[in-house]
Length: 257
Image (cartoon, rainbow, N blue to C red; front, side):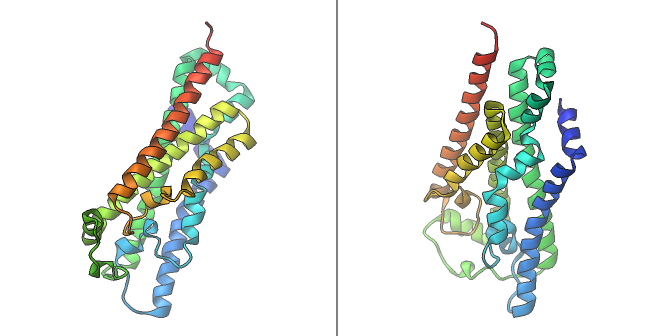
């Protein structure tokens, strides 16, 4: 089934197009920041502080586009492929061969790793680009001249590449959860319009919280580990619980007694 998933993604022009778009959005952000540096002059950005997740560009439009609508991008790439299975009747053949439980688990797990590795690749491309464009830069928004109450914040500012690595890992984790959420909604609703609407709502409700999910993935801010950890736990638990409920509901509804 893994090969089938990969073939679906790579042979779909829409999936490939959305993947390329996701890669290009942080590229746009880096180029926007570099053009601003060339136009205004001043100190060159430190690559870590020019990194996409740091949100240093004016307006933060690229961050809003990619991160707010992340689960929708992932659905188009392939985490909604259960919808195609149900539409074509292909799920009957798969379930009869591997069993319903294995089918559901495989859809959820593959979608998690799809989101995780797509985000990993997107951020890796951006990091390579900013490392080239801002090679030798030292500007850190003046944050290296401030001492925060949180030792965690101070440490990430003093060791910015560690901050980039840690927050990138958190972003990949959230992207994985977003992919799994989309898959769970696909398995439950079996209808594209409801799947996309529900997935976006369940994602965006945490974006709009006071302790936003966006704080979890943005380094070099005033939000320390004590702010990030509770939000991460709540979001992770919520999406895992939703996926588990869908899994057991589908098993109970469809498996013979």
